[in-house]
Amino acid sequence: MATITTPSNRLFSAAAAAHSGHRLPLLPPSIRLPFRPRRRRFSVSAHAAPLGAKPTVLVAEKLGEAGLELLKDFANVDCSYNLTQEELCTKISLCDALIVRSGTKVTREVFESSAGRLRVVGRAGVGIDNVDLSAATEHGCIVVNAPTANTVAAAEHGIALLAAMARNIAQADASLKAGKWLRSKYVGVSLVGKTLLVLGFGKVGSEVARRAKGLGMHVIAHDPYAAADRARAIGVELVTFDEAISTADFISLHMPLTPSTAKLLNDETFAKMKKGVRIINVARGGVIDEEALLRALDSGIVAQAALDVFTEEPPSADSKLVLHENVTVTPHLGASTAEAQEGVAVEIAEAVVGALKGELAATAVNAPMVPAEVLSELAPFVILAEKLGRLVVQLVAGGSGVKSVKVTYASARAPDDLDTRLLRAMITKGLIEPISSAFVNLVNADFVAKQRGVQIAEERILLDGSPESPLDFIQVRIANVESKFASAISETGEISVEGRIKDGIPHLTKVGTFQVDVSMEGSLILCRQVDQPGMIGTVGNILGEQNINVSFMSVGRIAPRKQAVMAIGVDEEPSKESLKKIGDIPAIEEFVFLKL
View 1: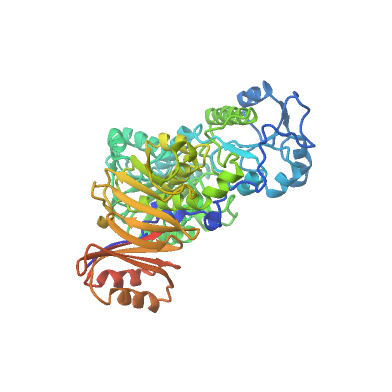
View 2: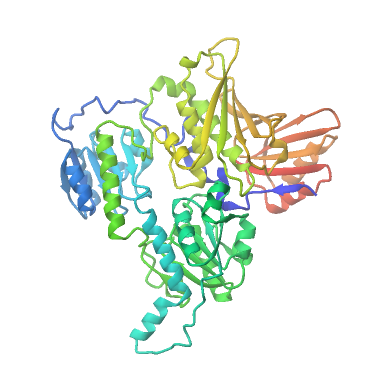
């Protein structure tokens, strides 16, 4: 039977996290720009501060004093807390920058009410769910956040919940304060020698791992993006998702909430876990199916859970999960230490001041202005670049760390007549953004890649011919990794994919050494097979039985009756049963399902 690789590992399915705006005709929302670009650094609107005057910064939620002092050295600071949406919209036309935490909604109405004056929105924290990024970009407003200052605080809170849960601290405290003395009821479990699984081995996850090692725990992690040598340096073993959840005594979650991580822990994944497992979540509430967690708690599959975050915040007063006797809860306190709050205040103040000075901040989460003529010409190649990044990272086998990426551009243009920064940024976006809490764009792409230890090298192939089109093809290769789909390995031993623009649409034209031709829309099935009659019909019939629409199909082969790679574009995700049927076809040697 063929080797089957599907996106059942939803945690780090690179393409599954595509933003909803990804399929717009030009650019994803995070890099889309106004139709009439304005270089805000040099323009003055009707409501702008007088030339030479200090800018005005509205601080709409409480900020640490150290951050306020930094702001006051550069700008006029208006601290107005607990504003209604109407009050915020009234004030904003007199402000050049706005700083919020999670409690203030910065909606499209806010940007429209600014009448063009608002240049910077600073989010004092990591998540930017409360800021309309698309509206910000359309109004020429840079959005910056503070992604690093609360790392240690979040890690420490995860460890605090881990220990409190294991020893029933919250339950015993409530019992004793109620006048009871129930020593035998609250017997806990030891941490030493137990296996802790860290799901998401980024900044917070790796800090949790360091501290758990100090408690004598055996730590494993799942994050195919993490470099194995970095994990080894901490004493952590990178393992596959199924192995991880089936062997762990404790599971600590540290991944962003994306379409690929939403309800990652569900009935299916709970069923694969060791009976009596304990869950800690200081990441995002939506990564756990809360109804499924309740069922797992009641059945004994999950012995205990410790939760700092919830799908709905605050949760309802009668939440069965919050009230469950085997659940320890805190009200989203991961970043709530005095030191972290001061660190966040300084970090966001520095980012806002830098942006007001016209500097390109590394923590910007939306795009700077790009000349309209460059954007128009490169638009289809920008989409191609991101999709190639999303495709190639899905071909990396779990546990392999992506460290070395080479991008090749084939063009008839001279090197100084082709600015590839935007293309490189979008390849980086495709590689990193879906499996990370980072927002990647032209501003911060190189910074984000460097921060994660990814080296992206570029090379040009100069072609003869007319330079009318900026590019002939883009090739993306990842070295020193294992592949889920062996046929994607090139002659040099790298995972390699190549694409072109045809009639304005991105096409995948090469996988490994095999030539294919399939539109990069929807999802994709790649099959390596014995080249023989009837294969296209056989696979097509299986998909047709499930009402799966095939948009494109292409076969690239070595020679007649030898090996071939079939690329099939599908509009919907096939069921597991359909994929199994494809894998059971005797002539198919391996296949992989990819989301674009």
